[in-house]
Length: 176
Image (cartoon, rainbow, N blue to C red; front, side):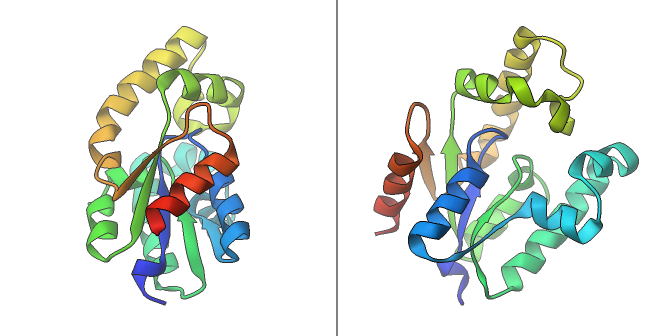
C-alpha cells in the first residue's frame, strides 16, 4: 500500500476525527486506526496518564514515533491523529510530502465548545478548565495557534451542522 492510499483525519479535539474515521472505514471497507487509541494500547496507559506522569513533550515524541509505525503498516488506510499531532515535529509537512491525503475537519469554536463541555475530565489539555467561558476562550486561542498547521492539510472539510453522512460525502467528493 502506498501512502497515497492513506487518508489522515486532522483537526481539533471534538472535531469528529474518530467518529468520521470509523464511519468512512465502514463505507470504504478499509482499515481504520485512531492514533490515540493505538498509543494507549502500546503504552498500556491512557493519554491523560502519559501527560500527567511524563509530560506533554514526552507524549508528543512518542506520538510521532507511533504515527511513523502506523504509516509503515500496510493495513491502515484511514488514520485519525490527535489534535496536536500535526503541530509537532513537522508532522503535517511530512504527511503531505509522503503523499498522504490529509483532511482537516474544521469546526467552529462554538461547535467545539459545545462538544467538549462534557469532556473536561477526559481530555488532559482542557482538564484544568472551570467554566464554559474559559473553555471557549481556551479553544479560540488554541485554534489560532494550531490553524497554521491544520490549514496545511490537502483538503479542508467544514463539519459544523453537518451529519456524519454529509461529512463522508464531502470527503468522498474530494477523493474522486
